[in-house]
Picture (cartoon, one colour):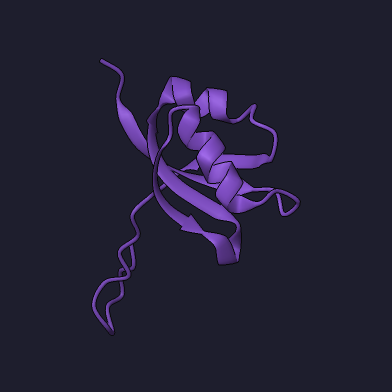
Length: 79
């Protein structure tokens, strides 16, 4: 069974982001968030689906979505 990962997809500014979300969902992405202000969509998919999504017109980039922990205030470690 393929491993499902979280992805951050950057959308071209000349494409309506909500239409892109619909298109990516139809291609197999499970949408988590549409971040209209920054032109990104987050969602989950397996690696094969992510590779296929790279070819969708209007997709600028697809990168793994990584959790970042800033740590408590005053902490030396941030990751």
